[in-house]
Length: 274
Picture 1 (cartoon, rainbow, N blue to C red):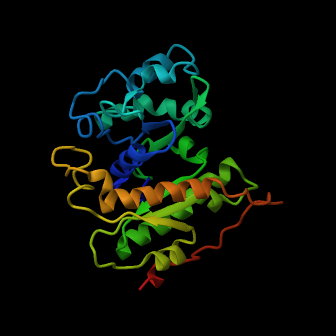
Picture 2 (tube, rainbow, N blue to C red):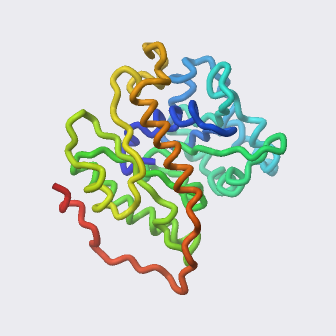
């Protein structure tokens, strides 16, 4: 997810799914709109397979055994699967009732006796009808941020909000153990480096996915992707990100706290980044 405006969240999610080493499902839960059917699939996908169809079922029955009936290939020939999102923001209220049951179903999804990893595109933290239950129950929350000061300040504020939500779900665990940042610089010249951003946000900044005009900007549209794009610098960054995610998830859990975590007000002020 992002602190605001969701810069590159969907693109990064799709790129990760392309190179994911295990069975994977992309759940497009951005409450503003979904880009993948119109963009990545170029309108060839099935609009009935996704959150809207699942929400209709949820109105009258249990969806525990229904989720995988509403998924489709992420792209023709892809082993990754897609739970498509809404097409216009007005549909967000209709699918918001799914966030709570999906937050319990997706982390333990098994298909044909094989566990399936789930990448959830949550869009922007402050969108109306944001999928907060999915965030609270995630194994790892990735916050994408640019490297400009205004991006870092927004990300800093988002970290405070996210730690509150994560702590509400597991009050005796360190909430920042399940939260990490990914930097998406917009140009070759860095405004603030990854180390400085990590120091300000006070969460692990696990990777940097550099902007790539030829691949990153075209990935969702699939119109002008260069041949061999999977070997591009952009996709190499995505592969490093995927390995870093696995490393984060394999860390031993910290010792349980004996009381609620208290976060000092104003700690880690973003304006200190130079």
